Length: 134
Image (cartoon, rainbow, N blue to C red; front, side, top):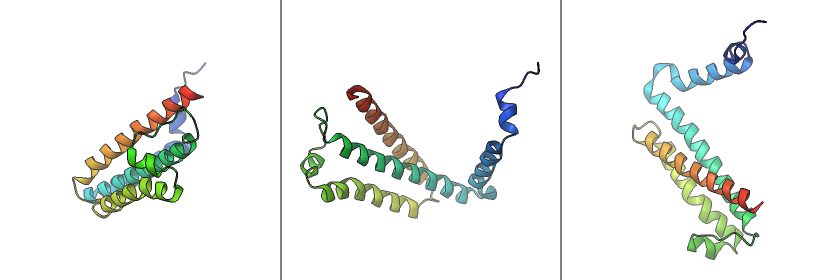
């Protein structure tokens, strides 16, 4: 029987070609500034997605007796859905717009990685909450 490795199977698949295309797009033809801008754009998309998931999880959990919003301002706004959504979404949207505008500057990429890391930790907290109360 032939010794087939998973890497060999992946190399022959369309997934490998897709990954190679994404990697080439991220390299931006060797233009470092454009490549940084593309990485920042992907990170900002991830931050926006995780923020939307945080908002959805907060709204879903708000009806559960085990949930308690720790942010006192958000807790006060939780009864007013439009204000609550604006309070949760507008600051992140503003930050994303500012960082997207400055996406090719060297200091923006580490900030985006940090923001993405913080929101990823928040997503893990939500996973733990739902795992404990489910």
